Image (cartoon, rainbow, N blue to C red; front, side):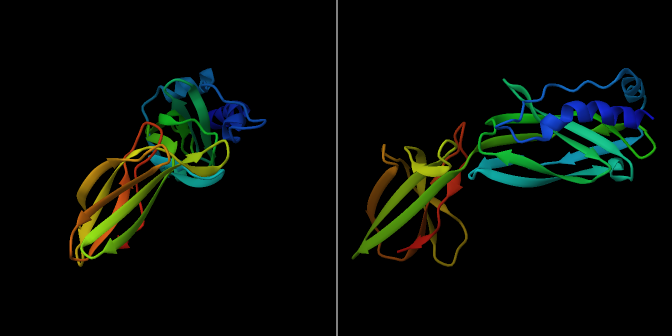
Amino acid sequence: MIRRTLTSVVAAIGVAALLPLGASAKTPGPVSLPKSATAKANAVAAGTCNLAVPNRVAIGRPYVGLTVKVTGNCTEPNSLSGWNLYHPSMGAVDGLLFDNVNSQVWDVYSNYPIGVMTWRPIGAFDGSDNTLTQNTPGTTVKLAAGAWISSSRTADVVTLKGTSLLYSTSSNTFFKRSAGGVFQFRERGTTTWKTLKSVYTNSKGEVTMAYRYSKTRDYRFSLYSTSISWDLGSAVTTR
């Protein structure tokens, strides 16, 4: 059966794709379907198979296992589907194979490539070996940021201190770093955050501002997204 032929080919290359990118794992390359499967894949698709993956992944720990699923006709018994994850400059960096299962754990280690990537189909068949149309979802992987805020009040003067941090993949810890951010406020009893002042932390990852305001407000310190890190808001402080 064509489905079983595809299984053997994908398994041979896809095992490495499913391994973590570290130590003994090898970066997989593009997967080619066998000629028999390609001929069938060129026929009119009998249904759909869609991969549901996070479109935003933040690396903030040594490892995280993300449960990903498929939907559509490839959830039938004995179905098969697969995708490779392509980095814009590195090519295929990982892959997922769903052989008679509807979900898999996507292993994301701290040394995972950073960037805007696309899951490209390698083939999908339902339980009767009918070809299925696959989607091409995108996933952006960046480092996790950290944001702290502290506050104090003297009479009608409120002082706010923000701290920016970034996850280090070499030490698996967060470190202070300079970054752009914004102090925000929210009137008590409301849910809308408004900009108080846009700021940039110093080389120690810290920034302080003071202003006069007699009423009590909620405050937070938020960081902007960068090419390697995600945006993030701190906990809330009230003064």
